[in-house]
Image (cartoon, one colour):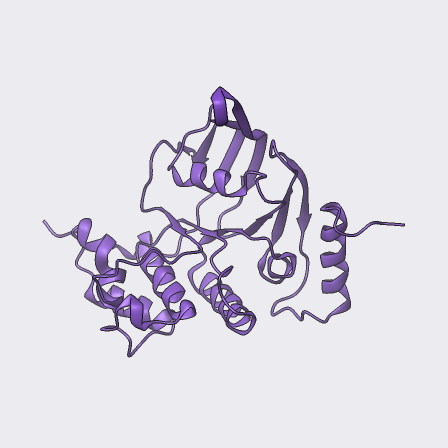
Length: 261
């Protein structure tokens, strides 16, 4: 039987709760690497949350745990009160590399997850291709697309599943500065349209301030939450605004990139 979406299934952001989560990996010569330690975090439905911190602080590890790709050694993570133990289409994940299937065109890539779930989705697929601005490129293959276009296709492929939570792991890191700014606006527009809970891992403090409701600042390994900053700026945000610059400077100080004399 072919499944169909119900209206009430759409446009619902989920609530994530991370409770006492720690994660350790095996290192070289039998040593252990403590990636995360005692993480407690509540993310509200429809919130845009960014996670920043130095390389190796466990940002991507935390995303993988929320996605269900790994399990914590201690603690638990829930989505709307249900424990996360494995990957699920309700939790979409977009990487820095778009990871499109090279043998499928844009339309087929966006449709692929729905076909696996046997969902009749022709209108849905086109709607999301339109949403990310790729109308006219449905028959294009990944090697014909620019980096920004490929990332748009990856976003559409994740969003067409109507995830309650969309996780973005440095999705704009490989793009040039101009394309990156355009894609930030696109991600914000999609978030405002879909009301999906979004979690962004980024090294770009300005990007985090521009997009987020809150920013989680992580400490160096073992990764702990060093601070959580609320971004109380009206949207759309102006990068040259005095309050924008103040918040950016505050976060850089927390990260010890700027010394406070």
